Amino acid sequence: AQSVTQPDIHITVSEGASLELRCNYSYGATPYLFWYVQSPGQGLQLLLKYFSGDTLVQGIKGFEAEFKRSQSSFNLRKPSVHWSDAAEYFCAVGGITGGGNKLTFGTGTQLKVEL
Amino acid sequence: EPEVTQTPSHQVTQMGQEVILRCVPISNHLYFYWYRQILGQKVEFLVSFYNNEISEKSEIFDDQFSVERPDGSNFTLKIRSTKLEDSAMYFCASKQGIGLYGYTFGSGTRLTVV
Image 1 (cartoon, rainbow over the protein chains, first blue to last red):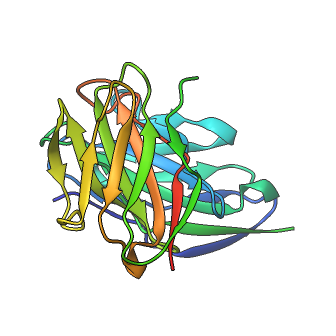
Image 2: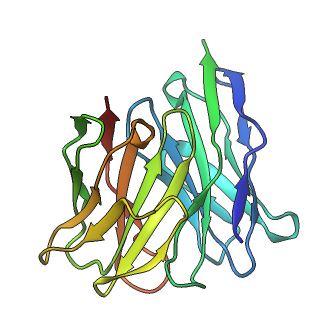
Image 3: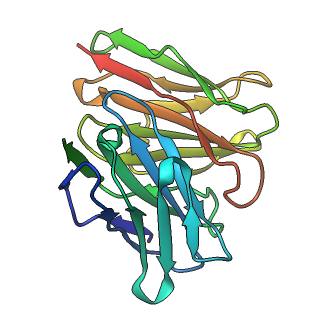
C-alpha cells in the first residue's frame, strides 16, 4: 500500500528565512511524487512533481524539491520565504502500477510566516 | 492552459437529499477521479474511472456514491442520501493516458450538508 508521511503539522518561519518541508513516502515501485499548495478554502495548486531523471526538481514560486530514493524522501525547499507563502502544503505519491493511478496524500504541513 | 472545471463551487443540501457534483475534465483526457477533503484533513481518494467503468474505489466510496460520464464532456459524482459527514470539499481530477503526466485537479466543490 502506498502512503505519505509529513511529520511536521505546523511550521513557523520568519519572512526571508529558508524553508524545508519534509515528506517521506512508501511505495512498492517507482514513485511519482508531487507537492501541492492550498490556501484556505481554495483548491490544490501544483508546485512541482518528480517522475524521473534529475532528482532535484524546480517548481513554481521559487520552490524546489529533492528526491532521495535511499531515504524515501521528497522534501520541499525554498531559500527565502515570502509572507504570501503562508498556506498548507501537501505531498502526494502515485504510480503506474494498479488499476487506477490514484494519488495518496499526506496530512499536510501548515506554514505560517512571521513578518 | 487547459483546466478541469467543477460546478458549483459551493453547494448546500439538506441531510437525506441527493446531490450531484459536476466536473468537466480536460477534453482529451481519458482517466477521471474524485477525491474528498473533509475540513482540516488530508485529501482522500474516492474513485477512479476509465473506459466507462470504475477502475478503483476506496472504502469511503460505498453504495451511496456513484459516478457517471453521461456524455462526452461531463463526469459526475452522485451522493444518493447525504449525511452530515459528507460535508467536505470534493475535487475532480483527470489525466490523459497511462502514467501520471498531466494529472490535473479542479478547483473543487464545497458541499455542506445541513
